[in-house]
Image 1 (spheres, rainbow, N blue to C red):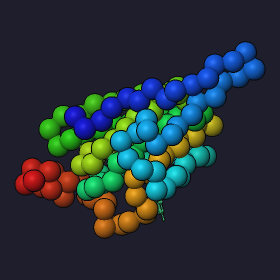
Image 2 (cartoon, rainbow, N blue to C red):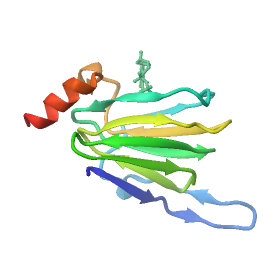
Image 3 (tube, helix red, strand yellow):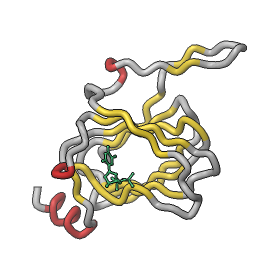
Length: 132
Ligand code: TYD
């Protein structure tokens, strides 16, 4: 599946840790940064795929689950460490759920916000990936 867990380089210190993301550790140039916060525990986010854009999801605080589906297989990835991110390449359906209280999901994206890059209906997604 077109996903990968990325270990983010960190500088550990008794005063606290620093995790550093530079463009050489991710396979795209960062064009946009956004984050999800104050997400109710019962909420589901995502529910779409990107035709071209890549994203790296990082649980800056707390935890949540990402359900990923490539049109054939589904996996559930739990994110709960601020130095481990989930890289989602193109054509992967994703849903985010089970947010802990205070969870913050940082998203680094390869593109600016572009509604044309989204597939927001799961049947359309299946048709899209199966006819590629
Ligand atoms: P949406 O993609 O549905 O959020 P999520 O996948 O996290 O559940 O986005 C919700 C709304 O925010 C939608 O109207 C589009 C808008 N939006 C932007 O304008 N810019 C952005 O960078 C993002 C991620 C969303």
